[in-house]
Length: 206
Ligand code: SIN
Ligand code: FE2
Image (cartoon, rainbow, N blue to C red; front, side, top):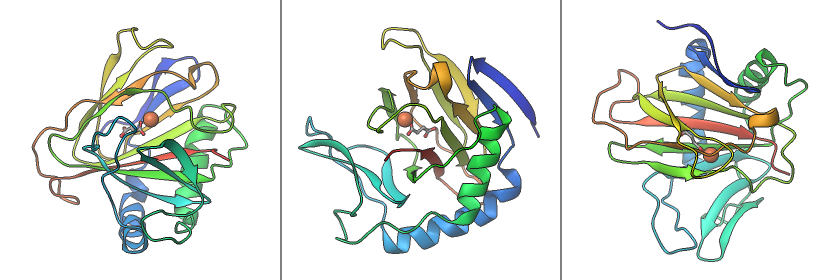
């Protein structure tokens, strides 16, 4: 098992295995959340269907449709508020952020991504939030993936970082607006999640 901290850039690091002790609890919460706010394939403003299925918990959720990207306090699929953020999610996110000195941290949204083999996320910045003072905390569960950690400009060649079950990536401060993405997920089988990867990203969005 990998443990320890791998620095990526100022304000950014991989915390190897940081979420391992939380994994079963987090996954049980994800199941509960998905019963109220099902995973769905969002449409981009350009008319494409994303290959990653998404849902959210917290005070708002990140959604995309033909009109653009936004944080919405109401789930457009159900017409109801998103499920609240579980205490275990908050505790883990705060602990991880604190490792890099980002304290206090009050994320109000957790975007939940579900990848199956072939699903990918192209290079993007997380910039739909109100401010960029607070870091992004990203938790990987299930099948391994290759995370792309780029620079401040889209053209900057990204570093390829393998992420496994329980790894946490934090990017904030001078790295908060770095481009990032995920390479197409490889086929595989994970003992807890089968053919899936679940990623939680915490943000202070509102
Ligand atoms: C994201 O950029 O929202 C997700 C990153 C990941 O799945 O590792
Ligand atoms: Fe992102």
